Length: 328
Image (cartoon, rainbow, N blue to C red; front, side, top):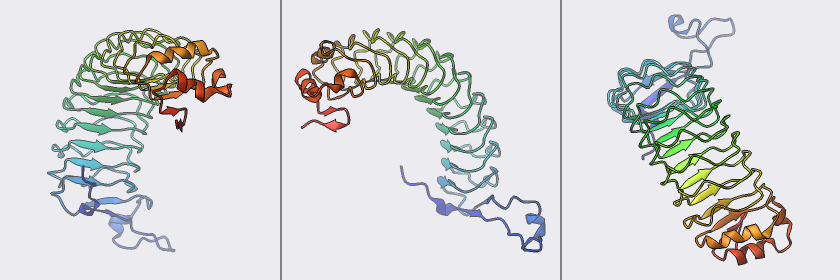
């Protein structure tokens, strides 16, 4: 993708106040204005991409002339409301990352939208997406969302990012049959469930939640990447049907035994640091995985062994990296 061109727009600085308190320029346009924010002035109405990142913009306005716009980037501004976008029907990508938005609204006309990024805002509810049936990627991380809802109709969705919210349950995802990437890390989820319909899922992230068991993943036969670090899991189990796994992250749990993975012939990355592995006999189970390239076992009792790296390499000769260090 070409770099968005900022030459199609001017972000106009506000008029400055004089020492006497009077404003320079036209008083009718300067009076009562916030002197820390800027306005948008369009120079090229035919541009396809527009970068307004870091513009100190606090209001979406003056965009009506952009009749051909496909990609609009408004990251790191001061926008509090989604508005005045009705005429931008050609828009394919809209980024409003890191603003001050509290509500998903006024997007009904953007029927061609494929990528929507509203991460790092103040949104409490997933709503206002009824007409966005062509949406492929939806980013809502780092908001204040408590419930997964109002996304079931997004049948073309390929990626859903809901990390760092306040979600307690995995639910209302049955319609997302084309979803491949689901990110739910850093929430308050205590059980893996309601994923059976996501048969095309290749990446599932549930890091930093409240999980105590690996379960209900048997339908996810296309899964390549599974991230379950920073939970309360004590047993590796129920991965019998996930034979396509290439990356398995179980770091920072309470696991004592390496088991239940010898059938994962495609596994290349196995992250088990910060667990409770103390018996080398259980580490021997890694010998069955002939494609294994990287293992993290640091901050386990076995890692205190002076021959730790040598023993691991003898058990799994295919290793090219142990912890953060490449093998010689």
